[in-house]
Length: 527
Image 1 (cartoon, rainbow, N blue to C red):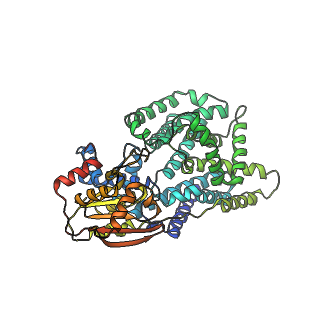
Image 2 (cartoon, helix red, strand yellow):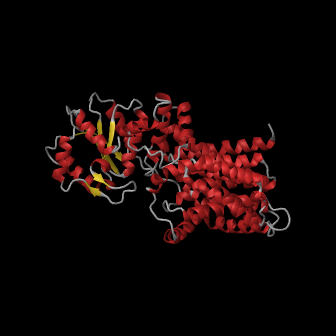
Image 3 (cartoon, rainbow, N blue to C red):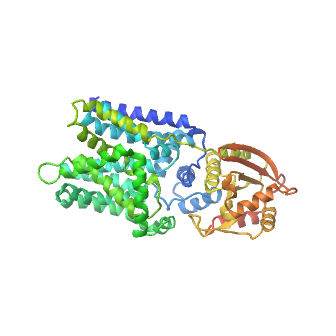
């Protein structure tokens, strides 16, 4: 095996192992899939793909998805593209349908991301700086947070970094092979998450930074662009209305003006003051290599990617969240490390020691150990599934995260789809995807109690954390459960980090087929 390849593999294995150790230390493998509002959806979408391929391949996928949603109402393929779910479904097929397998994938992706950065730095600055730069990537607070959740963002960061390297190869020597590689990375990224469209800005920014149009005007570049458009635009045009329904802002300066200071602050939080100074110097160095002479295409491409993805984040008004910056962290760390080296090299002959030391110091300064807060929904789902009761209806109360955690737990443990998990936010309230325009379905607690008594629901899972009292319908149902003579029995309870999760049951209650249809009609309006 070539020494360079062996070193690269060692970096990936080392950082993947470190990622797993972090997950074990914070207790990620014992946590529900509710760390974010989106996590349960990504987990359920992947299991949907797995179950469709195993149980109903070549049948109508929309009918299968509609029935799946009736049981596990966090299906959201369309709001997000399908590529990540195909990848994770493949992992589930090999390793089993489990949260552990999904988290292991996140660890591998984080290891590949940090390993890629280390390889790039190794070529320029040697092994100590390479190891330290990988640590900076793993120490980034946003990546540490995402490491413990089943999310798309770290996969996007890896794909964007690889796309930048493919464009660098194309800029050095335009040809079909590097153009095809750039197109492939772009297609996979765009069909993983809409943020991938930021890569369309990369060639333009690169041309401006290097002050040459040669790569941009080649026929191979335009062929690659056409292939990317043909393979990605139909999906996004067909699903744009679904995607836009999740935007918290509208396009325009009002969003950009609000996002700019928020993301600038988040960049400092994740790269550190030292890292941001290095990044600015590295960007300047990448720009200075343009014009006369032969530009450093790798540095120029990575710097262009940081600028392109940063600009796209400030334009696309989905939301303002620090985790959206993870797509530019790997490229930014490489550019920042090169910038630090260029600052230190004239000052000391010991720059080979000073640069790694500065990187390690920076990693220590930005490090914030992630905190996970389990709900205990796995234990609740197992309790219901192992009970002899034949009532299939389970109502979830609490925050969107708590609802999602219960749905994900049932989907993991109930591949035969024997139960229906009903969301309180759907059955007892109205609103849109993002929770705005919220309105409780019932004006009084008595009306909510009457509906619940007549619903045929036999199981009720209540998140008793402060979030459980945030919305009117939650307060109504909690009041019903705590009232004497409600007919509900406390069957199980589990302490959570923010309070308690309680399982209530009504022995002997069975819904009629009509009641089940009515409840599912509200959950799946077009079902």
